[in-house]
Amino acid sequence: MDFDAILVLSFGGPEGPEQVRPFLENVTRGRNIPPERLDGVAEHYYHFGGVSPINGINRALIEQLRTELDARGEVLPIYFGNRNWDPFVEDTVARMRDDGIRRAAVFVTSAWGGYSGCTQYNEDVARARAVVGEGAPELVKLRHYFDHPLLVEMFADGITAARASLPDELRDDARTVFTAHSVPIAADERQGPRLYSRQVAYASRLVADAVGCTDYDQVWQSRSGPPQVPWLEPDVGDHLSALADAGTKAVVVCPIGFVADHIEVVWDLDNELREQADAAGIALARATTPNADPRYARLILDLIDEMRTGRTPSRVPGPDAVAGCGFNVDGTPCPSSPRCVATFATPTAGSR
Image 1 (cartoon, rainbow, N blue to C red):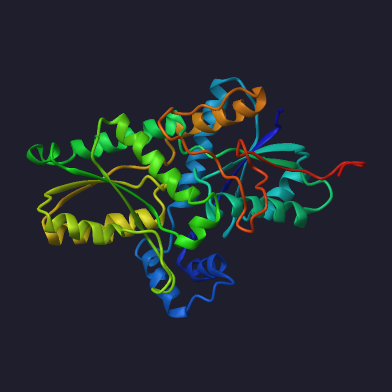
Image 2: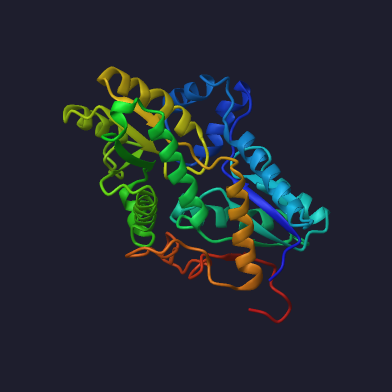
């Protein structure tokens, strides 16, 4: 299978104060989130001038992709689309059609399975093609990459650098804590089952092995919704309190669930968690995410090459490996199973 374009598909984020509330309303549409809850989340964005880091990071990643393609002597146009904010994926797919694109590889800025990290992006692609209608390009969403060697390497390097930033006398005893975005337990159990949480735990173990860490913690963060609904736990803040009570003096936090410094990283970890650590007398070092690392661009091209050649996917081997998703939230087979590659195309005459 060959491609004549790449589509980088992401979550989206505001790029000015006036965009914050409309963006949050897009994200939460149909979920009956109280306005006061949106007001609270909006303050996180206003703290950074109303600008989410995510669009800028994605544009920098696209430039890295262009650099890698140039180095390979390959010409392949790259398009950028979002689920929740400009550039919206529907508009991008329309532009791709107008540019004569026939088949594009879709790289999603989520390494995981589950609904929001995989299935919802499948829905975004299908919706965009339906909106564009006749002439919409075939779109092939690439597989999950939570166990790709380059992703493991980037997170491992981030942990090593974070640990090195701690005072000499605290480095050896610093506790390693992996954190990812929490989801409702019911949602996690509907898809896989526990597909997302198992993938996160597996990736954490791969990264811990890569840095020679045999004892670490896996926690969750950034939960929302009514308190009576159970979400994945423990919460990173609660866990930090427990570590403080146990006498821990230093912590290295790795946001394993985030491929870029989203607002949940720069606010929830770099702001709130750091304030909590300072108050508890704990030295906190946060590992970087892949962001626009050149290796992240090479990872994307490697996923595309897997599709072009049909070769075995690049994975870090480990015990109890976790496969890709198998089912959608409604119980129907996921179109990206078993290789976690979803293809969206207009049926040809006679097909069914």
